[in-house]
Image 1 (cartoon, rainbow, N blue to C red):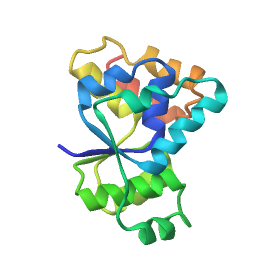
Image 2: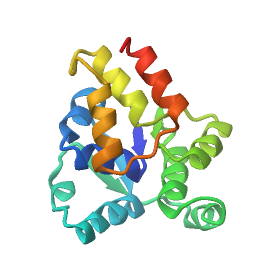
Image 3: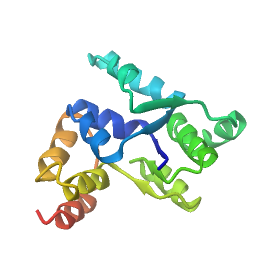
Length: 161
């Protein structure tokens, strides 16, 4: 399975110290170089970002079509744009992304897009966690993760919480 990730998924799970949940449920992830650079910027907020260089299950790749990335940056953030182009080039099975505008664009291209809430639901379903709410709440509080109230409630409903 080929899974490409944008920055928000990795940064949110990293900030709540739960990167291993991603590895256990999703396995190998591919990120574009721009996403890696955005993750490194977490160091500006006191985070030790060297871990992203050491994760064996995280692969950094460049999108081949940089012209397409440049064109898409006019509509989306650079990390999202490169993630979408790379996912397209790799014929990814899933694209991990939270930003609404990026998700809508990716879905219009036919991608299956999963965000932090969806990943937590999957992690719970696989039995790696017993509750979704504490993880969502930590992301909101510690990582400044913004989640629409309706999506938050729907996530908890789907999790039977």
